[in-house]
Image 1 (cartoon, rainbow over the protein chains, first blue to last red):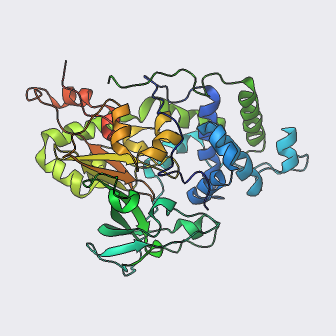
Image 2 (image 1 turned 180 degrees about the horizontal axis):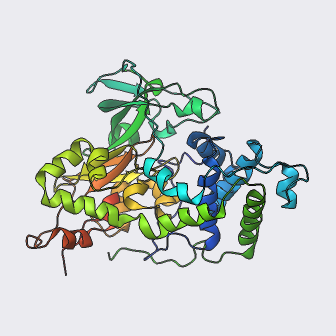
Length: 219
Length: 206
């Protein structure tokens, strides 16, 4: 979707604010929100792509106003309701409904080192022919889906060269909407800065994007 | 790092009590329903506050500086090479290492959200997740680097890596001069998080 999260190339966002000796979390609640997101996702009722999309769905003005972990908290509130973990009225009252069943946590403290060590592979070990070869010229398609996509606006319609093939990965545009993993090749595609930004850009510079087969067409 | 701005008006520095209470309320609800183990939350927080951070990546860099065969493995298959040092897993499942040289400078960003190699760098700093960095790193990388205090000559090639998929990028910075006699541990102590994102060079030892 063409919301404000897709901000590559935008102007007007102000100067960088670089904090020296920054803590990992600026307040205890930020750490709790971070951990609650990971712990509730461990139940596999939502995936990383759906999680990213939930944040993109925030109204654009809220997205820009909220701090990072405020956005994560907003996502958490949406996700626990959408996945049926809690009801709207439980969320509002802060109390479990009287008839609510008692679950078993999908993630216990002793499991934390293991799940972090294993991670979650987004690659898929399936044999699929790549549509493009390293060195081939390609164009990023001009698509404007209203759902989740990882093809930024600034690259759409632009021509680049396949720099490397990373292998086969889950396709976020469908996975975010629970419409299947649709695994396909992901390539690192090199776009010159001048192709993306015009003649004012440095002739030496370039931007590499990781793009799925479905985002590309021969050029 | 002379070009740094030191603002003290981050919106999370004056946290109103409201988020604290609201987060606590939701955590209590999830715990009461048996959906969350509070000790698991403690363990997750402890991991990223105390165990998994840029010191991991610094060890990888120092090894690559001192062991040419390791460096070659790192640049060919970063995930496996990093696993040799015991690092991997969450947000480091699919790693790529990018070598900075006098001629090529690599810079990493995630314009769409906040993708970052947790397994080697920990959780990202606020600036990495901020609109100014995400919007400008791709269109004006040299200007962004200047704000970090790094001016690159025109004849240096800048490569910006936008983390749009599940690949996570670690910059292998240039080894600074006058470090021939340092041990691997001493070298690792020089390596900064910012250098491994590509917004700084590793400074010479004082």
